[in-house]
Length: 124
Image (cartoon, rainbow, N blue to C red; front, side, top):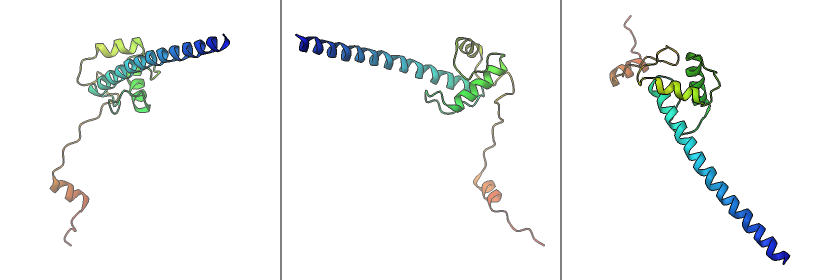
């Protein structure tokens, strides 16, 4: 009888563990998708969140803090409901503040690059 009870307990534990793992997996996927959307929006409006990879890493957190600070939100670097609402209100394009914004760099022709990298000797 005790073997039966022990076996039932093991099955119950593994069954619950699988259910928890599956639920955690769905939860993680939803969070990763949300992070990707936030990263894309931050990049679109000029805050450099880095790669749109679904990872809330240092670059994404820094971009979030800059955005939050510019919008007078708690600059935590975390995704919260107030930050999501502020991001939803942002039009895609240029940021409304200069924070995080960089001017685009002009494209260099191969000849310009060569002259920059290998300056020619000036005549005496």
